[in-house]
Length: 113
Image 1 (tube, one colour):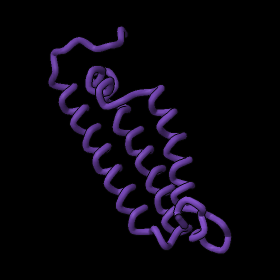
Image 2 (image 1 turned 120 degrees about the vertical axis):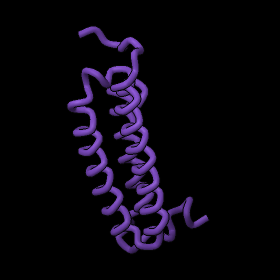
Image 3 (image 1 turned 180 degrees about the vertical axis):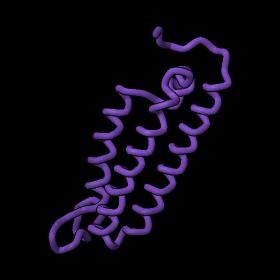
Image 4 (image 1 turned 90 degrees about the vertical axis):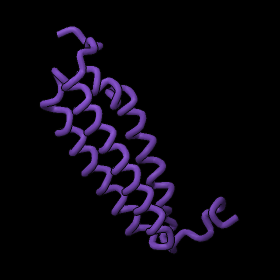
């Protein structure tokens, strides 16, 4: 019940999970409108030069948010770090695969250049 009511939040009333949820929803909404590993793969021949640059920037941003949330919410630090780390590793791997597969693929792109 404490997790629902926020009774176990620290004295400042800050909740690391709430912070991460808000940040994640913001990033998800923006990313959904921009790209995905699937479109990265389909258009890798044209976009490979900038693809990993932006994946790296996003990974650094996410890492900073996860570290801040872990610092703010010491009680849930392990879960925050594990969740953020696992999500970053999976997503990074997906984009690495998309780039590699797209560069060797003969499938037509989804964009005309």
